[in-house]
Structures are given as structure tokens and as C-alpha cells.
Amino acid sequence: MKLIKNSLAIIFLFISTFSFAQVGQVTFKETTHDFGKIKEELKKVSYDFEFTNTGKGDLKILKVKTSCGCTASQYTKTPIKPGKSGNIKVTYTTTNRPSTFRKSITVTVNNPDQPHTVLFIKGFVIPKEKGITGIYPTAIGNLKLVSNHLAFNKMLTSETRTDSMKIYNAWGHPMEISFEQIPPHLKVKCSTSKLDENESAYIIVTYDASKKNDYGLVYDRIAIRTNDNTQPMKILNVSARISQDFSGMSERELKKAPKISFLNTTYDFGTVKPGTVVKYSFDFTNEGKKTLNILKVKTSCGCTTTKLDVKTYKKGAAGKIDAIFNTRGRKGRQHKTITIITNDPKNPQITLTVKGELK
Image 1 (spheres, rainbow, N blue to C red):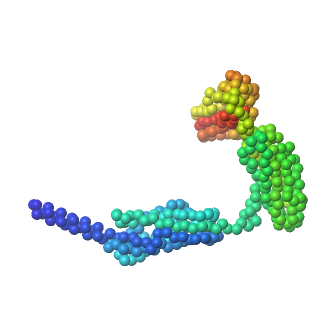
Image 2: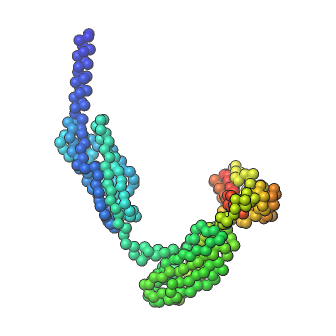
Image 3: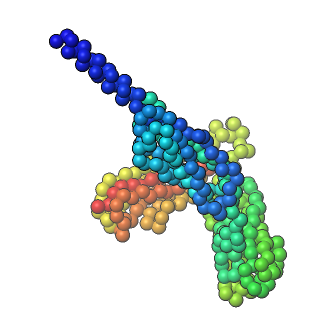
């Protein structure tokens, strides 16, 4: 019996050793390929990573995984005999990817000791030259613009800033440029009053936030009058996100400043039927020492309205903002916001939320 057990052990050891000895081994000629500088217009570039089975058994590629969707691969799927070669074709998409890139490709094979090999591709995609439509994607009649929206983004009430919008005359005639209905806080001019055909210029806008007398995200429209027979009047939209400038306040002034404190800033009305009018009052108190001013109350959509009877609150005074959400014509999960802008330097902007579900 003991002899049989010893014999079986020797047989299993032999089989195991034989099996281990018959494992394939992947050896790549190189594991990194540098494409160098390539043009975006090529759309795709490919490279074949060649390898050889340097093991004693069949080699099989089990999986090839790329680090991003911009990289694809094709590879030899049949078992590769010892001494034979195969390849993994890696393709990189250059479209809309102008910049330096470095991507990895993980290759998994049937060798339990060395199952993974990581390959790399790298290079630099030279951006393609943009045509007129690429440079000026917005067209209003025969006038092309980089955009019909000039955004000044964040501005303080004490700030004046100048920005510009590049334009191009795609008409076959000279185009006259002038401006109408300019708001008092804006100054607008064009780098030329007459734009020759196929010529570019700049509309230059100076924004004085101190004269806007408004807060938060605000919009204006600049009327551009031209002699363009397709569409003589054109509109350039201008926006800014204006906040108060508290930088000049001393530490003592900040300690005495107004301080708004809401009992809560979110109201969840649960589940109601569509068409229900949801009402809720957001209660607040001025916990500061100076008078609190509610400068602006703005809702996220026309379906929500607010009521605020008083806009100034002395030390310790309480108030409320009544919110009314008309759910008519709506369904599913709802999330509406109310933006409150105050003269509290620590909380100049607060967002109130009304949410729930309509079933």
C-alpha cells in the first residue's frame, strides 16, 4: 500500500513538473513605442508590438486591456507554439486630442508566473489648423463670431474689466459696424467701423460692475447694427457674475457685520400629486450687529416664486422668505433652488432648496 502511495506521488510530481515546464513565455521586442509628433488630421495611428513565445509550451493571449477608450487593440487569438511569433496592434485616435499623450496597454497571457505585461504608447498630437468655420463657429447673417456670448464671469462690485470678441466678415462686401441700446454700465466699440470682406476685427466691451447695481449672474444684450442684407441687426450677449467687495473691511468691521442664519435651507415636501402648489417659509434671523440687507432673491425657474415683505433687518430681527412651487405640468423628482444675496460678508450668497417627488 505504501509503495502504491509513493508511486502515485512520484507520478503526480512528474505530471506537475512536466506541465510547469510546458508553459509559454511572452517576450516583446519592445514594450514602449514613441510615435513622436503626429498630425491630428491623421485621425488614427497604429503600431504593432511584436512578441515571441520563448517558453516550452503553447502561449495564449487571454486579454488585452487599454487605459482609455481612445486606444484600441487587435491581437493574435490562436495559441502560439514555442519559438513562433505574434503581434498586438495598438491604435490611437488623434481626433480632438491635440496634446502630449501616454497610454498603457495591459497584456494578460496563460503564464501563471508572469501573467501580465504592460505596453506603452506615447507621442504628441499636433493640432490641426482651423478654417474660418473652426475659428468662428457662430454665424449671424454674414458676420461670423467666435461666440455670440461674452462672459466676464466673476466680478466684484468695485471692478471694471475689458474683454473682446473676435468677428469676421464672410460677406462679399464691406460691412459697416455700429452699436445701439448700450446699457450705462457697458462701453462698446469695434476696432474698425467698416469691416472689409474676409477681414477680422474685435468688438471691445468694458464692463463697470459698480454701475450695474445688481448681483449674482446677470445678462445684457448688445445690439449690433450692420448693412448686412441677410440680417442687419445682430445681438451679442454679455454676462457677469457679480459679488460684493468686502476686501476693504477691517477685522473690527467684520465682527460687527450682519450675519444671516436660516433655521434650515432645504425643504423636502415628500411625495405629492402633479398640480399641487407647494408652499413653505424659510425662516431666518440677523445674528450680527449691523443691519442685514437682502439684496436679491432669484429662483431657478418660473415655476417657483417668492415673497419677501421686508428687505432690511436690524440686529436680532427675524424674517421669512415664502416659497411657492407650482408643480403643474411636471412629474418625477423635483429640485428647485432659490438664491439669496445679502450684505453678510461671510454668507453673501445662500442657496435654498425645495425638493420632492411628483406621482
